[in-house]
Image (cartoon, rainbow, N blue to C red; front, side):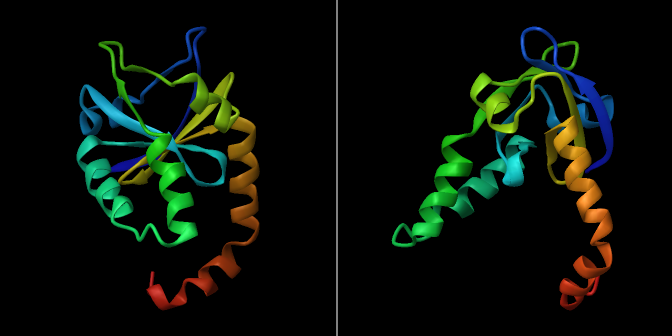
Length: 143
């Protein structure tokens, strides 16, 4: 499982260093795709395969399902993790997430989100300020 928050800078080639604690879960390659709210999502291949199958089974008659499929599936790319633990983030994905320098990698149990540092600070500040309301909205989940 992926836990924790790590700050990294992209190098001149667009590579990001994967935290050591995440590398054993990811292996030598992983899937990166457009995430929700302007981040990137990094998945181990086995988790991605299950998720991609579920997305692909959404009804094509639904405009929302088609849009979600386009976002998640067409944006996906397999990335190799080199011997130094770095992964090259494709340019179109860096552009989507606005990542051009400092980034935050956040472990979210079965995936890693990769955020532009300023965007991450904004989204977490918002979530922290609304934490009581968010918990109330999720009360039926009995977290």
